[in-house]
Length: 156
Ligand code: MG
Image (cartoon, rainbow, N blue to C red; front, side, top):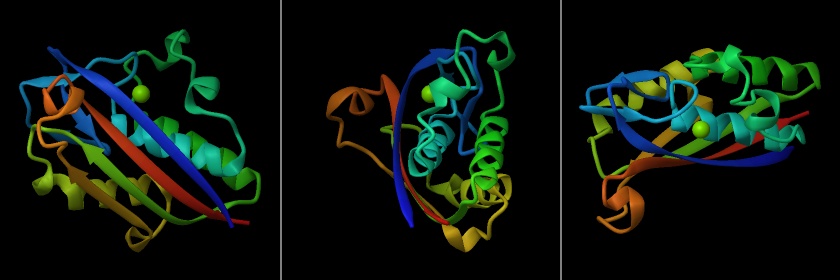
């Protein structure tokens, strides 16, 4: 077994669709990024790379590369999975926490789980997604952006 951790944060911006966990969320603001800004999939992709000893998302998908401009982060996660499967690893379990003061994410959590499991090619029982606020403290609490943590257990 190998464990990996991932963390990511993005700032809110206007004029962009908010996408978290591969699911479109109703929100007046999106997340500023070179890609679609899917903070949850970025944290998860980093956890997968971390567990496999394959550095990080910025190393594999640099934001200076025009191929990843407005990239669908599901494609990045799928590519990461292909790489670690090539190394002989399979997903045992993934758990994630989204930290956001707004919008309310509870109605979207199950859709995120299903979408993430589908992208990773694993059963939904191996994927868990949670959301919390930081009680109006810090940058997420002030509504400046959203952050996410992920842990991933790989088996050889
Ligand atoms: Mg990111």
